[in-house]
Length: 282
Ligand SMILES: Nc1ncnc2c1ncn2[C@@H]1O[C@H](COP(=O)(O)OP(=O)(O)OP(=O)(O)O)[C@@H](O)[C@H]1O
Ligand SMILES: [Mg+2]
Image (tube, rainbow, N blue to C red; front, top):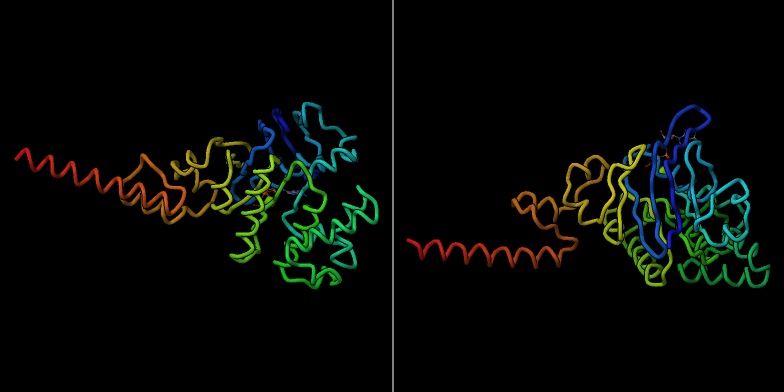
């Protein structure tokens, strides 16, 4: 089943600038989709369109087969199904305390008692229950990010739109977010994640590279075989991939250090057998 279908979508901001043109994207139920591209490529605009915060200037968006319209913006069912993690946590944190912020969505859905309970659970899950009574304004960048992730989690959305979820986080917390995306995937939730983080891209079933419009669609492996696309998306190629290019191995591309080791061992074996057969010829 298709969760989203974007047909020839264009978006022009009131300032007159076209952020998106001719975008065709499909999101299938249960898949993890990564969207990458340079700054200003229209990635955030795309997620806002998927979250019905913006309506396209051109083309149309279908959610679960139905057109997204102005009514979708305030549709309770849609809002419950879709969770949006904003690029900047400051946009999501506006209450007097972290708990109030995280509880805002769940209280709206399940009422005060159940909503507050779930909000507290989300804070505990992220290991930040100690921040519950703090003013969001005074949190560190990473703490803000975690609080905004808790706010999205607490409503248990089926579809997660994540705008750079690992930015501002240290290694431990980046790993936590990666595990979380992995777990959501296992639970059959649909994830659309905008990222510059190669480890997030590796987790994805498919990747779209954007630059005003879609310039590539394929698997992470197919993307890593195309260094010019990685450059176009302004991503820093992973060191192991650079190593493989330097070694002149272009047919295979490792997605992890373990895989790189396997390929290199196989490659070394092939090199030595071909060398010994050449030697035999002499
Ligand atoms: N509210 C706005 N009003 C006018 N123009 C905007 C607005 N928001 C974004 N734009 C413009 O639209 C284009 C796409 O912006 P968008 O935020 O979608 O890019 P992005 O791919 O998310 O970039 P980044 O990687 O920097 O987050 C940019 O040229 C930007 O300047
Ligand atoms: Mg953005």
